[in-house]
Length: 416
Image (cartoon, rainbow, N blue to C red; front, side, top):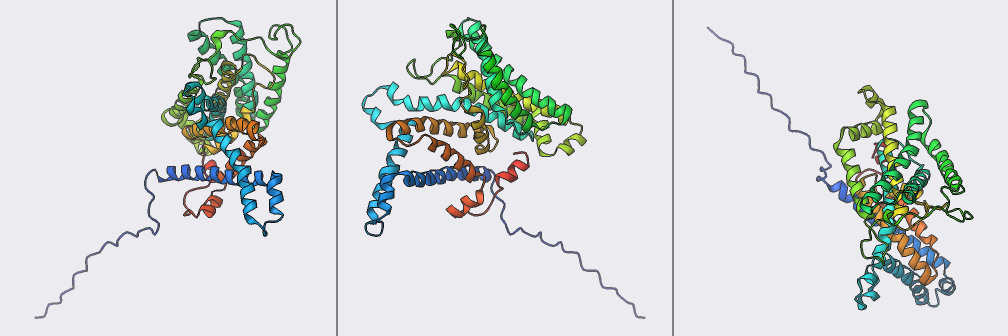
């Protein structure tokens, strides 16, 4: 009797997972890549600015006319044009080696002191723009918020005369409240009517500047004998204590800036409010579906942004200036946009970018006075740096870097 046997089915063999041809980047590599890209953007901006210096220098142009007869003359002339300019840019922003021979700490720290004075307000304005960016908003109203913050801080500063441990926090708080109210107006209009924050903040800039002009014409705000558009002088307790002695302008305001950077990071990364703001910035529709108030997020974002710009305005009164004047913002409101872009909207990056801008501003003043190089060259370097940051493909091409990471535009589209 024959029996039929059915062969057993072959066991299933799991297919090996398909490995990606692109190896995963190590944790943290993208952060270092962004830092490297920023540094290379600064280097490239300085190189392009050096070319501009050479083109504007008569000796370089004269040597270029007979380049093929004596090429060394062109390079020597270019060095004599660029070398001293960048040398004084460094001396005026970091340290002047000539001061070491004096042994005076005041002279040695003079350059870094000026850098810190300029860096503080612009970093706060950059934080203001960054926190709006992370919420999907574009705060163009830094100028108005700084002006109103300076006006409210100045009013409290010359009205109250208390010991500085009490007066300084009150003046800073007054500036932040003034800026928060001014920013909150734009946020409220966005939430209630859908008015675009770019338009409303620009218009509020004009209103803020003219409100300050009005205040500088009324007697309860204007300084006697009531002939100049300048406020009363703030009381001595209003001023930030100096860091390096009374002869240098650097003050503890830069420590307040660092503390506010930490506070902004904590709000954005470790709080429910920060999570909501970031979620709204990445995808408002999904956030609304999840039950989040998009309008409320806009109000909170602009209030916080305005408070930071108000702190920048207060820093102007509590630091280098004793009185409120029409140009008290000193371009800080608009420079903050550039600082936020360069810092990628991250508090640590904004702080680093603010220090860079402070160094360029302080060094640029020294460079212009010592070499005659126009101080506007600093603005060119700042603009070129942001331009190259916004075009990472160009940086990769120039420095032959491997194509990896996202562009600034993609980062912004994702809510930073």
